[in-house]
Image (tube, rainbow, N blue to C red; front, top):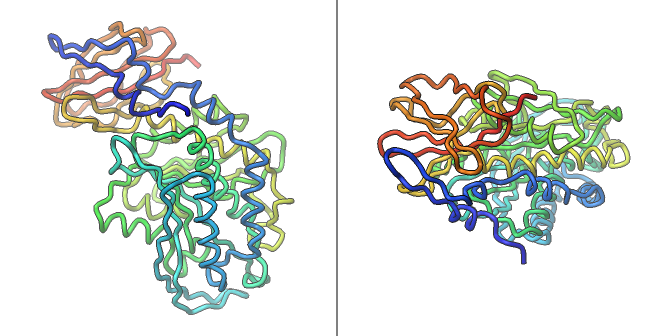
Length: 416
């Protein structure tokens, strides 16, 4: 059985207060998810497995939200999560009023819809929720008849395949995250602007129950490319820059896809919309070469590129692991809190988020052997930058200290 990754890693950290400074255990570097671990998990993404996931969804004939097989579709997705090794899987039902008059889409109806939620419990911050989502419903419009055949291979069986593949790989490695991860197959996305959607229902329920949604990763149409020079669009949302930085780093370091960052302000499409409006940091992956078979009965696996899709799925696997280094995590009152650093890797300077802006902080920079290489003070209300241009390339631990608060994080210095 493979080692449980998170608890032993966290317990390996020893922080000793001594004269206002910190002495670190030589095992401190094991606190962080290292590149070799990310590479190992990413290498387990398999094209044949991805193709099998998408074929499984396409073979349902239709996943249109108003088709009579919608509960059967939800049950089948739940069963697949369980077969892939996730122990906690539930179906959350919600009501959706849909009013649309567009071509063949003419509906004024109230239906029961379903989100399928596969939970990987966190073993430290189990009440912090990381959401990875993709809608499973599909549609043929306006000429086609979505009640008869709507395969939706790229839109969006490809995104659901990313959920399945993360479930399979994390289960295979018996990975237990610090924070709780929920893999959510959302219903009712295609007609979300004409009624309620699964993402809306999920966020509304979380807010009503004071659930802390810490980040959201969305995959929607990641199965099509027109060229051999693979590219993927990464939507960069305001206040989510740190998450975008992680995605860019994973894309550049671990895949053969070129990242294309699209800056967004108030715009938030697809299932990200409701998370973004609730203030949740979001990341949205989407193919750069838009599929010409979108919303037609030719949105088939034969018109998608499984090699490209598998490569795109590696991004979500890597981000979920790499975010362990940067996401704010309160362990207990005597241990450290993590920070978000961006850009990461950094060249000459970096910014910090996650600090209490009302306090002044002393900071200490340590190399991975625990040697102090830099120290200084961050004034109150000044979080603009810390200069590291004199440091050699490599990984460093940053500690910030104010009163009884301890913060830590990891930054990579690179000239490239």
